Image (cartoon, rainbow over all chains, first blue to last red; front, side, top):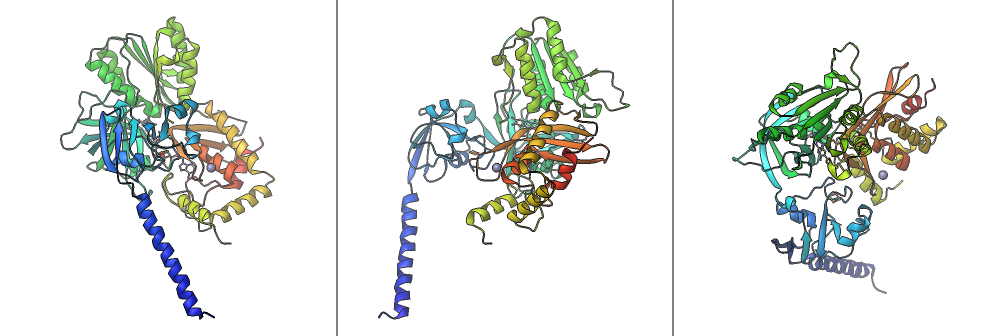
Amino acid sequence: MVPLFIALAIISGIGALLAATLVFAERVISNYGDVEVDINKGNKKLAMKGGGSLLETLTAQKIFIPSACGGRGTCGYCKVKVLEGAGPLLPTEEPYMDAEERSSGVRLSCQVKLRNDLKIELPAELLTIKEYVSVCEEIIDYTYDTKQFRLRLTDGQHMKYTPGQYVQVLAPQYEKSSEEVYRAYSISSDPADQAAIELIIRRVPDGICTTYLFDYLKVGDKVRINGPYGQFYLRDTTAPIIFIAGGSGIAPMKCILHNMKNTNNDRRAVFFFGIRTTKDLFLAEEMTRFETQLAQFKFVPVVSQPEPGAEWAGVTGRVTHIAEDYLRKQGNAHEHEGYLCGSPGMIESSIGILKKLGITEDKIYYDKFS
Amino acid sequence: MKKSPQQRKLERLLQSSKFSASGFMGTDRRGLWEIIDEDAAEIAKRGKTMEEVAARMQQLTDLAEQGLGDWIQVSKNLHVAVDDNRGMIPCPWPHRVRCMKRITTARHIPSNTGVRWSDLNIHLIKEHGFFEGKGSPFRIEPGVLIDIIFSKD
Ligand SMILES: Cc1cc2nc3c(=O)[nH]c(=O)nc-3n(C[C@H](O)[C@H](O)[C@H](O)COP(=O)(O)OP(=O)(O)OC[C@H]3O[C@@H](n4cnc5c(N)ncnc54)[C@H](O)[C@@H]3O)c2cc1C
Ligand code: FES
Ligand SMILES: [Zn+2]
């Protein structure tokens, strides 16, 4: 009979050998060597070590793909068209793809591993997105829950953006959050000064980023941002404009109005700004000033539930209904372009009204929030 | 009872602040399954099911949504409003569910009490029977919730 200690030694030996084989196999299998990522048919080629996810790899190369779940495959933001080399769609990606995306090779870049050369297609604007370090220069209280943050880019940098676009702000780890998170905020400032940007931000109850910005960020602190993103900008036509915004949704409209002033844009435009109580109203003076600076602009703040005793001589009601009444009276509602920014509920309701009045969907613009 | 690796992974995720400031467990010392069991017992004691509670919350959110932020009177004593924010938040369970960052507040006028929930709370209750740990900013006390949302005039 084999003594017990010899049997144990043999078993441990086999165990150690298996473990070593696994480590060796892991090293060899996961060593994918150098791979090449070809972007937009040879427009840009990146050579790098394989093994990581496509999202990580692009981010490391300062190509910023939107992402809201840190690469866990749960937000569906990080879609990229892969023309060659990604293998079949994974079960984790399937729920996020519609039939057209499946057939055209759209993938969640956080789920695609770089095992071999890849050919991908990125919208040109993603290639212009850069990361910036800025310094918080000024914080202004607009209302009890809304502030404006002015961020000056460091090292004399400028951000080229189209008025209406947004940036992503990084909230670092802090007392209430052990992870870094990025959140989107529309640029509200005058685009004449591209060395600094302003953001109008509303506090979201127990939100990771807004709690950081409202309770922790101080003037003089560094803030990392990247951008610009988005397809929300003023189309170059002569159609009359209807802007509808609620709360912090005023931000991109303000930026667009500054630009209209800077470029002597004389299009007819009316801006319906919805707030709940008179305490929620801000920037009214600046908006009214645009009425004198722009040839054909009207600003209409609309308060839906003025608090008892409030002295409010302006328009009262639901902003979407007031905008609807206005358009009906115009007689040419269908000729308008609609620019919307605010809560998903307000956007959905505005789209319904504009469509009912004959404005086609391709003339209604807003940032998709999901 | 010994926890499976998946259970341990889920508890770690619920404690982290990756999706939610302060996490979903708050300062609760109980384990996830203990919290779920105790809240389930409270719901049963009140003669309700998780489905009924979640369905009523959803119904109130849908009603409140029509107000686009304004208070809506559901009955003589119950008022609701939504605070609709841009953006989505994923469910921490390992499946692909995302909810709007929309908060519904329900106010019971005579008792001057209120309760708030996000769309994610409705999903967490309906699918996972989870009211979150005590100390989490979005913890909902099942008893308080039932008193308010099923209140009779
Ligand atoms: C294109 C775009 C542009 C935007 N522009 C602006 C802008 O100009 N100004 C602006 O103010 N905002 C803007 N936003 C919204 C902004 O990006 C953020 O989504 C918002 O500020 C909230 O971020 P947060 O990190 O503070 O909240 P988060 O932490 O992401 O979310 C908080 C919310 O998630 C839910 N939640 C969190 N934890 C839990 C839990 N434990 N249980 C249940 N529910 C929970 C609740 O609803 C809570 O209120 C924009 C969004 C998009 C997509
Ligand atoms: S980063 Fe969220 S799904 Fe890919
Ligand atoms: Zn879930």
